[in-house]
Length: 154
Image (cartoon, rainbow, N blue to C red):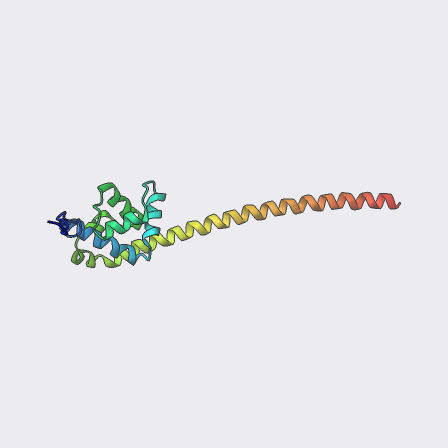
């Protein structure tokens, strides 16, 4: 027995993964990449929606190294702007819905972009109003100073 190492016979999740889990993992990656998102961006979206998720979790789920819970699956679907069925169904069925899924993910991305632009516009409006208020105050101060100088000159 000397010089031998024990064999690791523990099955990995990847090799013993349930077909439905493997399909979900594959579909998650397909939809995420179709949406143009990185694993980090998807994890950030899930976290922003109230369910903490790390990039490494997304990677492990996509690689079949970690099972996904129903709440995680739902959060991932929501973050991608698709239904849970879109992530859980087989490729043939989803190919018929590919245009719909692409549209949903693009709508989600554009909606987020618009929200960001609207927030930036609002911030600029507030900054502009504040600058205008300060300018008006300085003009009043200048007018008072010029009026006081004119009286002094008389």
